[in-house]
Length: 213
Length: 401
Image (cartoon, rainbow over the protein chains, first blue to last red):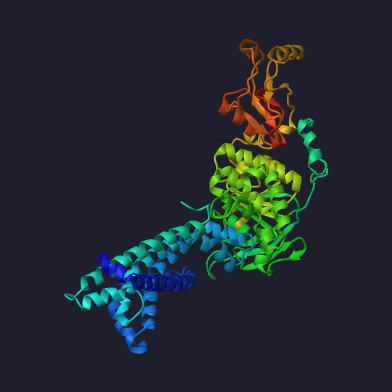
């Protein structure tokens, strides 16, 4: 096993980086989409429940099935992998962003409006910063979840550590097949832990000291 | 009752914003409401039904009434947090009914319960919010922030960079007032600002507000459900009935002495004699001026001095004349030292406190008197329970006679 890893350390490192890169980019795009949708819907009851319904139902779609469907228009490659991973990344963040924004103390919003802050300024300077810890928690959940989904995305020839897992699984019984699968899986876990630690750090740096718990 | 000259006057030299005591400074503008109405649905009864009201420049007008009477709705229509369904609102001579609400609000200070401070911003950033929107430069904002913290009695160096959660409720409320005053608006709207703090803190905040208003002369509209607060703070009081119908609009003295109808009489309640104590400020009655000694003075000299002056008590103060303790001369003689630790139970009121507050403070502390302090907490004298009693006696005599 050790030899197997040493022999392929460069390939593992490259794929691990690709994996992390795919996840980080998808989560970043997902977070942006989620926050924008949340900003549009959080003030209406119907919009809020629609968004919550969307994230609940969306998460029940099997990732394998979604990848399969995306193959039809996009073919094999990075595009379907990116779209699928972004889709799943968006959902937990959307749910948290809606909750975070609706839970902002309304007296603070009134206070902001009362001192002459416009709707949009209130949102950007008061509501989003106050909802940020909750949104960030959603980002962490989402990142952990799509680490696994990104591995499955290797099925459509997306980048990342999934290729180790799938190569191994398809040749199960053959030489090094088990090692390949194990290395892929283990590496995903390691990447996940590292990214999570980085996110905690980002959280420390981006959350005001006044609302840090 | 003649006005006693108090030691706080020594401080007026380092405060250039204050005019003479007689010519009250006015920096506010008048507010005029004409037929202001709020209807939430076309058919329903109006929450605020065609209110006409004129609030004079530089005065504090209290909106009082039971909950649901529309007083808060009326207040929020002044800065258009609630859009009126009808009527006109003038600020000074300017019709602001159709002005851009955001711009209007930057000219009107707004204070809500617990201050409404943004928890993710420092005290300084909170206060600098409106000036920043008005595009003041950084230097000017920083200077203004420090000036305001000083005005509300918080040391700028100590509090500027703190977050709201590191402040007590009373301190947060002070910052809330400072923030509302940041861009020096002519009008201040206060929506039950002191409702969430304990009675002692509330009394202090009220005293501070009176002092600040004496310095600034803003037009203040203040919503409260507490008639005692209204009597204490208001130059005028509006008592509202349902639909924001104005039941009476007059000075506290006139309302207490001559309620317009049964509704008002019921609302102000019984015990008008004691309420009258809320009309009289501590600085309006004769204060005593006991010997003040600095902590760490030689006790035998102090005792000799006090005996010579015929004083039974002395006030021990720190280097800035703030009270530390209030021992009797005999106590000093016995213990042989001048105490330097702060007595936490010392009964203290501000010079703008009412006699009612002073009596309250005496009862809470089980003392026969209170120490009266002025700006920066410096001692200006003492008030004894006998003086308060004499005032009550006076009111009673006038009532019966």
